[in-house]
Length: 570
Ligand code: PAP
Image 1 (spheres, helix red, strand yellow):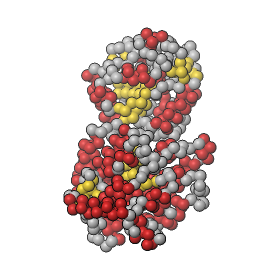
Image 2 (tube, rainbow, N blue to C red; image 1 turned 45 degrees about the vertical axis):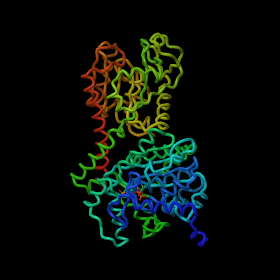
Image 3 (cartoon, helix red, strand yellow; image 1 turned 90 degrees about the horizontal axis):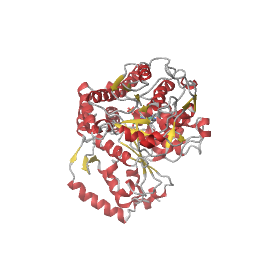
Image 4 (spheres, helix red, strand yellow; image 1 turned 30 degrees about the horizontal axis):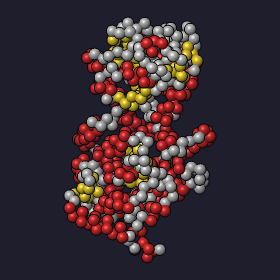
């Protein structure tokens, strides 16, 4: 066996020769963190061992469409992602409380440290090839470094990428490398020197921003092949992302599993608190691949620890690079679920329409607005009969209905079902940041945040961060009754940012104003038309942009609030 490992496959030997020649020609740099320098290879700063692995992947690796590449920039949540995927895939093989391998093995030992390292072992691909499908292939390599055979086309592998706020990633990386330096008895690296390299992009596997953007763009182009996760989102709502991850891996949780609380069991098993307190991850144990203690992968496991390390100037530098790098690529783009409904001129609710129709209407808004919103137009759940009003306007069937009301709009049918339908849609296609609704869609959208706050609806999806309500009205207001599920929806003023678009000639204008008054600090656009989606004039656009800015600010403040909460726990 040992002898076999000495034998280096002929193909491998050719690759190694190529590597040697190439290394001579590559720009060198880096912080010499671990005593070896970095090389600028295809746009990224890699140690030679990663370049070697990457070349072997290109020259010899045979991908399978079932392969799952678990990818991350170092210190962005690799250990957690490995644990979660292992637990999801093997959930039927072990008991969560007794014999689960994650209770006695470090996640890196269960999945391997890195695929780019594994392929080097044994002098041939034999080790990688004997792994059973689906193979979990962890990596820190950038997306663009993978061969086309893995990244695109029908045989492409699936990639799960976890990204993290660069400030926390940097702080975590600095701590980790200093731990390794201590082990190797190399002098410590100052925060300032490490920061200088990191912010210039000349850091281990950097530039951080290009790494993230590569996967982000790939996830937009091929959402079925590349799942883009954020550490902070997952910390906020782990069970939402465990479900999402399982769906992406084609292993969704069954109703029975949901009832048995399997999702929560996985979340708890893989939590920082649990894993970091296990014997295997303490007490100077070393991971199988050598090099490091199992405990080095667990430090604080918090969002926002950067606040304890970075100077205001450092924060400014990183924030600016992040903003400039991500702006053009809309990484901060807001995903909005749009609920369409066009009134038929009836006095009762239940006007039919379709996502496609509302899409056409919304595209009366300028691109400068639409490019900031990633709109997903949902069809309502109930197929509707013909709609003469819409057909007269040139819109073709199919049409769909949301919930219906009786003549005096005091009672509603199919409301609960609509809410359940939405939640299901959001779990499968989200996470969504906010809602945009028109008419009945606005009534529905407006009622959801309050129901979510009270734990009555949308309990399995992230918190709704904003609403855009066009020609809306309030349940339990001047005209509308109150569905039971929504009975507390407006019991206290709603604090999330809201934009209300109200037509001067709309017969339901008083109701829209009443709805607006149910929100704290609402934004409002009045327009001269009736019950419709208006074009936006210059003044309206100003309000719209101010609103979008406010949402982005809220998202940032929310993150800061989480940081403060975490700090107050210390
Ligand atoms: P790697 O790239 O070297 O494998 P990785 O696991 O990505 O490391 O990053 C370690 C970070 O994830 C540490 O963050 P910190 O330094 O800010 O504390 C570590 O604490 C955190 N971490 C490890 N396991 C978990 C977990 N189960 N849940 C949340 N965070 C975790």
